[in-house]
Image 1 (cartoon, rainbow, N blue to C red):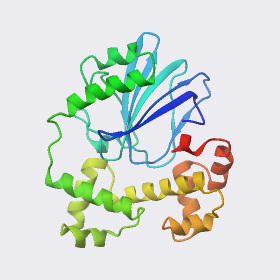
Image 2: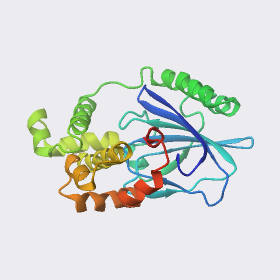
Image 3: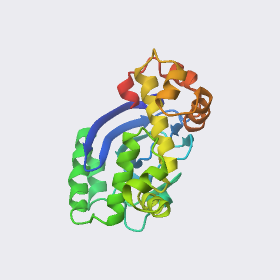
Image 4: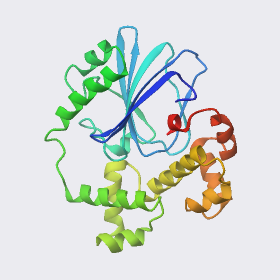
Amino acid sequence: MALRTDNFRKILQQSLGIAQFYTFSLKEAADVLQAVPDGSVDLLFEKKGNQLRSFIGGTVLQAKEWPLETDGRYFGVRFLPGQCFLPEGLSAKELVNADIEISGNAYGDNLAEQIMEAHNLEEQARFFLESYEKRLDGEKKEQGWSRLERYVRARIYASGGNVPMDTLVEETGYSACYIRRSFERVHGVAPKTFEKFIRFQNVLHKINYKADKSYEEIALECGYYDQAHMIREFRRFAGVTPKVYREITAKTPPAMLE
């Protein structure tokens, strides 16, 4: 988004399961955003004239074009993986590789009107937080499968996306089938797929901040078999090779790319 939009801004959040709020505009018809796998759910409000539309989408499975209307202003909410409270009737699996239009008030009464009338990103973020916190109250009840999912997700993060299923079975005492089913209930994808996303995101981070690292070093540090394996998976997820990605982002501050 930082590379392909106009007036891009973001606010890091890190509470209530929200990673960040962001805003941008698209002035050119040729501007097409590209989504990459990250395991997150995004909520996007499109403000065009006196109309507001709202969309929710989950992670993609590989690099995917994300066509949006021009001459509009967008306000987005990116949730941390596995931590978005979904509107009633929607499952995580339905959101994978999809963008579904929902009511602007799905996350709070009169939220759409507040988003429309807000003057800046800070106001939009505040209005959303107030509504979302009320909606969360009493909605999320801890279940056995959700505790298991949280444990598995933490282990995947801690291992950099390289924890074997056999290890999870041994540590939790649950079967591989139950672990997969519990994880898919929250993320819409299996733990193995999510691990690939985490390895890919780790590669992006190292490329962004470690310009002196060779691709071979990055591949080994991130748990790939070899450099070729990393480049093949990177191209699938990013749509370009690591070399081209480095060239495209060379003049962009790393913090804008995270």
